[in-house]
Length: 106
Image (cartoon, rainbow, N blue to C red; front, side):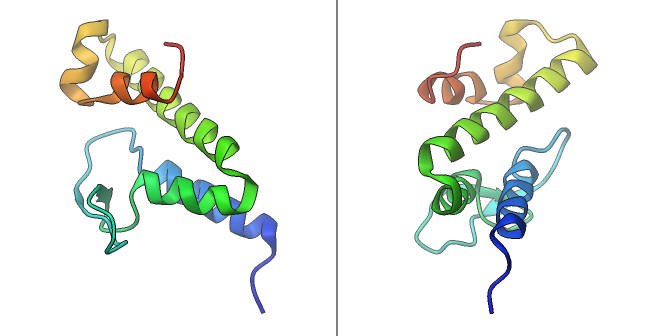
């Protein structure tokens, strides 16, 4: 017997949020052996979490959710530390490029 879909969606969202920490964290290889990305706490990376969520809600919605989580974490960090635009990539390398590649307006 599998978990209810609502629970599965909440779990997938939780795992995705965990891959975008609001502070310093440790990362290691993604638990998905076919993946080369880094993941927080040795779990699944954000890309794999997005794919898992996509199986439940559709890949476009999952990608939009991931981009929104990234944007929220970036905003939180900017609010807490008053970062200038050019300082963001020093702390979160590639974040702005990743958001841009997802079609997210910054």
